[in-house]
Image (cartoon, rainbow, N blue to C red; front, top):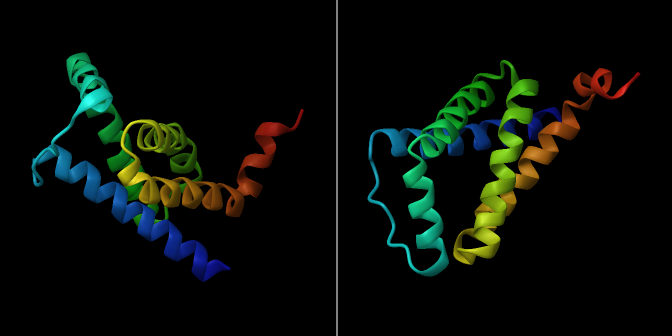
Amino acid sequence: MKIATIIVRVLIGLLLLFASISYFFHLMPEPETTGNFKAFNVGLMASTYLMPLAKSIELLCGIAFVTGRYVTLANILILPITVNILFINYFLTPDGLPIAVLLFIGNLFLIYRYWDNYKSVFTA
């Protein structure tokens, strides 16, 4: 189980690192958006701070996952982002849904594996 945890942690970390670095350095062209996703994307870009904030958190959490340090904190920080990635892919762009589901399940798996670190939060 320890090897599975390391594999999942590193794969999620590499995915987050790739997504954030490619955003900041414009390594990949922006995909063509249509319909409701285009309106949603225009709103994200109009906010001017939300995408850089989310990508910065992805970068920090990706580094934490790959290095294995502060994984407990990174799990909690990245959870709302993975939920949003899942919902955006479910409702607006279903073609990316398999990766979003795997990312979300991987995040839940890591929270489960590090559950002992969270127990004190839920006790009186």
